[in-house]
Image (cartoon, rainbow, N blue to C red; front, side, top):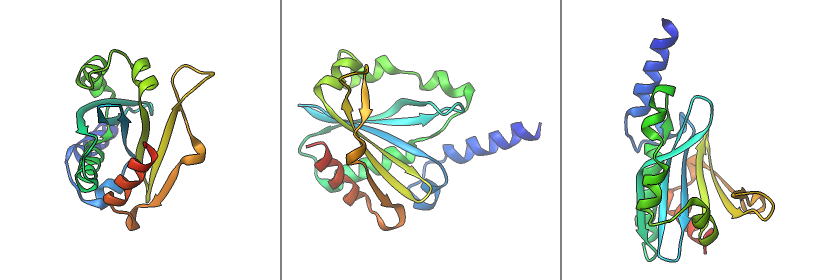
Amino acid sequence: MKKLNLVTMFENLFRKHSDNNKKLKESKRLISIYKTMKHYAILTAYQTESGIWLFSDPVYILSLDITEEEFAKVISDGLAHSRSISEKEENIFRSNNKLLKRMKERSWSNLYKTSKSCTIEIENNEIIIEPWILSSTQRGLVSDEERVVKLEFSKSNYVDVAQIVIDILT
């Protein structure tokens, strides 16, 4: 019974939306960004109890001419929504087909072939910007480890992060 109460307490903690940097550092948070020929698409990630990331709402579709400041606000908002989810919540967050429709994509495979992408992750006191590339030997995307950027969270601001993402995806 105590374990259930502890899980419930943490679920309630993660549900509270906050732009407070301290709360963002308490858990792992992640968004995925795709740059297509027409727009940027930012997907919010939710981590299951088994450690798998699921992408769901909110989804942001942004013009390619977005300012760094506007991009920074959306990055911050997406990361603020990202959280851990319980096993009971997993089905709520499984919405892959809806995500593709919003991004106006036919398939994940097509998106991977026609876009550039990266993830932004906050863990502990660090922001990790990780570019992804289409694998020539595997099906899907793989990390472009040589181009990963790590920043200390307390010394970083989202406008700097937005600029790095724009540069990586150019």
